[in-house]
Length: 315
Image 1 (tube, rainbow, N blue to C red):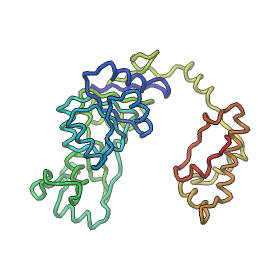
Image 2 (tube, one colour; image 1 turned 90 degrees about the horizontal axis):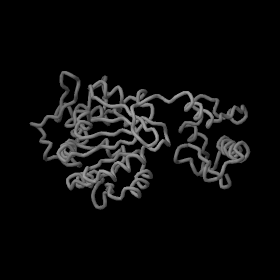
Image 3 (cartoon, rainbow, N blue to C red; image 1 turned 90 degrees about the vertical axis):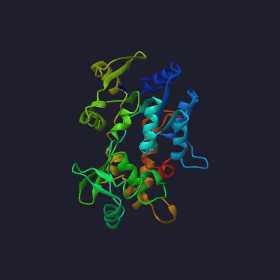
């Protein structure tokens, strides 16, 4: 059973699921969220959840132990994508309920580190079947004796999960294992605008049945798109600054991407004129354009390495 809770941000999806877990202590939960900070917030409300932290062992090994012990678990999307075939079998046996905060990346491009690695793999470790799926040669290399230090260990996991697919010469697709979603007794996916997501097409491809729901007054109801009145309320919360002088810095092609930042950082970490100009515009926006804003409410986005370069002390 897969239930998609499709509701606008801030509508209480996470709060609803925390209460659902508290009200169902006999169920085993496996919670997946994008950010570590969100894990901290959820654990404060649901301390029965255990996070794999990997003290003395890897996080994957710790996660494996938590599953073996039947704990309620919370982890990130990054860790969720690394679940191997052994963990999937244990999850199915234990009868976990999955709570997935936001859709996940169901398709990612992948390739061998070098062409020699690719040749070596197909010569000694694996092969491509008639459907283009990359398979592990169990007779030549027993996967049960493999550890994370063994040659092509990560490739072996993808093969056993049936997720690695040939695309074009030298290029492959690492596909999310559909059997992982099938291994849970229940699946709840908290998202917004699911119908426009890649995961919807992924579910449809594998003929996975799902129920589309939404939250209304704190209760789950059949999904309905936002009404014109609701969209109007959201629209009124958005203000676009159409100021040529402030926006000019982003007019060039590829402006404000990571390469732009790298090219505009001078030696010894000093700020270039362009970075200084951008910081000045951000400060101007918060101090003069948003006169009623409070420092703790101000938010801007950039690449992590450049956050402190643009941050203002008195916004």
